[in-house]
Picture 1 (tube, rainbow, N blue to C red):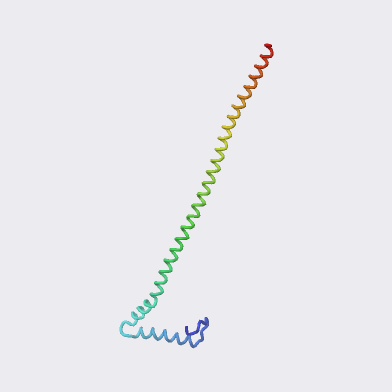
Picture 2: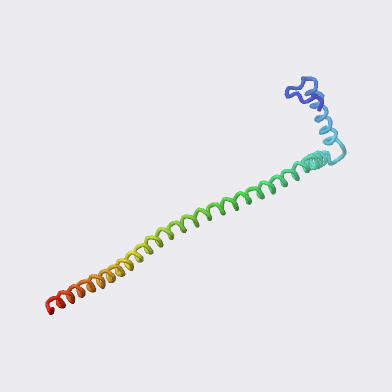
Length: 133
């Protein structure tokens, strides 16, 4: 505040602040019988707002990490489900194709056999009927 946002404040400003801080510490040290206790108490009181902010930041980071972990877990689960579905689909389609192929092969074989059997029977009947005439 005293340097108007300058990152390199003037030397006299640094000296003033140094003397003010040293004076406050000296007064606390030399006041009465518990000077050191007073200095420690003042340090703790001055640091308390920063400690509260740090605790809030830790809570915030934990919440964010928890959300990220849940999102990552959902992504991994979705990938795993897609992989399992794909494997199942491939296996099921292959088995299904093979089963249908075998069924159709058997049906076509039976149909073809019946048709040929009927045609041969008809030809034999025609030949026999021709010979009888």
